Image 1 (tube, rainbow, N blue to C red):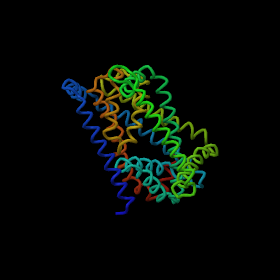
Image 2: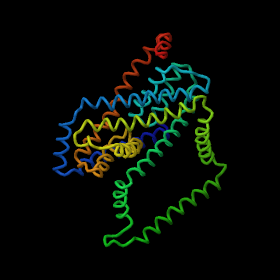
Image 3: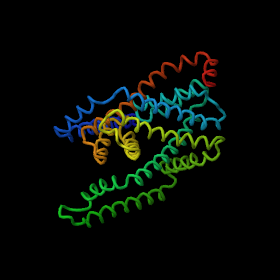
Length: 342
């Protein structure tokens, strides 16, 4: 095993271990009363209604596939919608197993069935990730603005533990030390970059930053840029609606409004990045978040599990179905063209 593969394996084990630890921590944070509430809320949940957020997520994934087609077309290729959708779903499926493997498999599968060079497709992934990151920043901003009264109290309590001692006195030395360390790190990083401007590592960082900028500016040159922007907005609107639909699965959270959806999407997106498939982190973050909206920790954890299972279920089962259908549909290109026109 090469050093790079070993590091990837160790990294995966570490973040999977983090997810398992957060699952344990979520259970440990429950009092006997919370545990009873958890069992009661899960028993009373309407599991048939979980189909609704799953269908909304499926529509979001299909919209993502159509958006990907717009990015591919300037390369001189026009893949079928059905193949692009299947490849997109397989990306989610493989990402559940190994982070970032999904992007590679997504491009590999579409390249195989549409005769498009895989390296060109990987370039479109950069633009996709940048746009998603910008959309997530917008969601964060909306969450902060609309949920400020709820979130600020929680954030203040957490900051107080760091910045104040038990007697309520400001920890000036600790604050100064934190600022000094951060300032030193920034200056050290800038000095290293300047001193090693010709090194391979710095060149790689520079190349990545140029790639990000190229990805952002490439949107302006798309033939259907307004459709691309509309689809990007629609994807995140559907994510919000999937959470809103998820509220109807449990009586305890049924009353929550769209503002809570923004908070869940914001923290949930971070959780999905933190651990493989968001396992552990997603449940823990939702358990910490929903008490701010008056939901007990037991039902909050239960709802975290329901939402996570809806997202994971559509990725796993949808991915498996697409894995089976992809070679079958491509037996006859006439069938693909006919399905694409529908």
